[in-house]
Length: 266
Image (cartoon, rainbow, N blue to C red; front, side, top):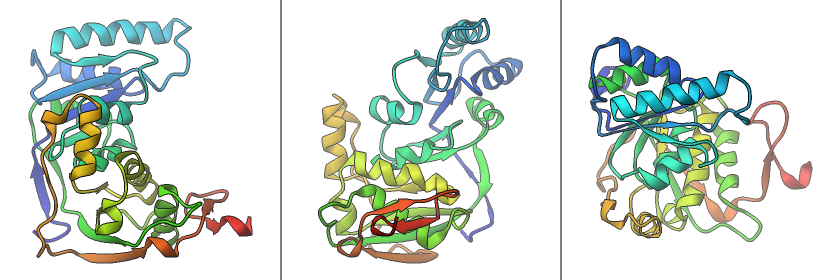
């Protein structure tokens, strides 16, 4: 399949948050369907800081009602941020998730394909209609070596932003491979896949390996684990190589996340 050609992919999970959820479920309600047609739909109440005035409780009441009616789980205020909670409680390697949060690609940390979209796109997905998009380029990010003391996973994605820019990832999926990828635990991988959104990437993904199994076991969901990785002879549209041992502490300076400088210069 050539990059840019139109493709249709089956959606397994949808997630919304309280900024776009009401619009999403009103649109779904208008279709006349009585249940969500995907494997898992979850509504997270996490973006409004305080549920105090007359507006947010009304939203909360409507979402609870819609959830009960249409088979949608509701994550109550205070449970945590949508993309992180979804990975911990619902995420499964090999599934495709569409989320109304730009950092939905967080789920790539456990071998899911997670794409951030708009609320109307989620309503459409909930009807069972496959997601339509242009085939992205798939870029293999080969991580070798080990991070030095003082460096962490944030420095990996900042190095990517330094190289690629905050728009250089448009129309691309970044697949992280190599011994350096294997050495990262799921929370570290999530830091990288989450901030792939800052490059404009369609999504980012790591393999589902022993680190993912350990993470799911810690969540009491080891039965959801499946090993998943690219074939050894996989073809890519591009390759980026990063020697982790060569990285130093980095930081993003105003006013864009790709304005990356070594910490020693700031």
